[in-house]
Length: 118
Image (cartoon, rainbow, N blue to C red; front, side, top):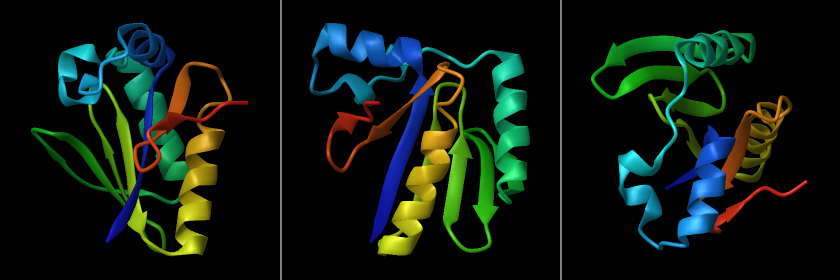
């Protein structure tokens, strides 16, 4: 069993709230795409957090952390996935929260169906 945390552009959060559609995340067209600069910045930031790029596939960039799980960087989201234990959930959650410091990105917890609020 895994625990997932998602990171989206702020525009995606606004759109999700405006549409109020339960299947919003099932349609990739609802996601505001990252710019090329944002993709590179997110890749660099993941590396600083000790995520190692494993491969690039048709889905995006696959990263692995030696302790805390995986991350998948797509054109419209950064998906963190970790094992279901308190320490890993805490660490991955904190990492995702720190990525929101610029205001460009918002953290979404799909297990609870809610955005992180400050």
